[in-house]
Length: 215
Image 1 (cartoon, rainbow, N blue to C red):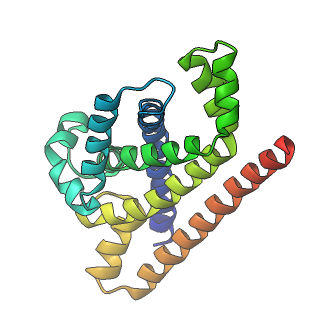
Image 2 (cartoon, rainbow, N blue to C red; image 1 turned 90 degrees about the vertical axis):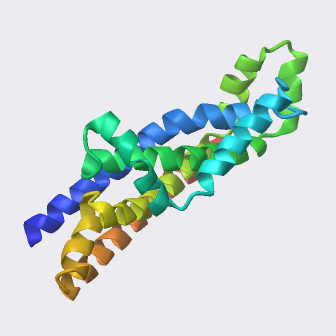
């Protein structure tokens, strides 16, 4: 059982890490477009912003456990099966991209408007403003965004265990629930709590250091 829990822990870390990476790759540009396409943004495109916002809201409104099941055909197309570690990553990425996009949008909204106006006055292009003002100024917030995304995905990864998604969630379901091994269930909970605490404290430390340096 010890070896099983160790493997489950590393599987969960792999699932969460890869899902976070791909969710950031997909969610970051969407969050940027949601910001700059606003009516008062630096590159207004109201219809595009509304359409993109509608898609994000639609996916976010679907409960994750239902989304996993609904994505079975797509998951089989991508990885060849609808269960296991790789299948979990596909579902988690699809579910997390809209979440990340909204977090990015919120982070960019906190950037000092005076800096943006100053960049526009100096003739900076929208692309230059995004790269050199929006993203640079929101680095601490984006780091905290990564932390929040990873913590959320720890919970999502556990839910994926209901459909054989691998990791600690799968162990908790197969042994803790179906075989009534309460000790296994408690151990998976303890491990996930420790995992979340380490993620939170590590990224908060990095973000706070950056905040102090900027100050």
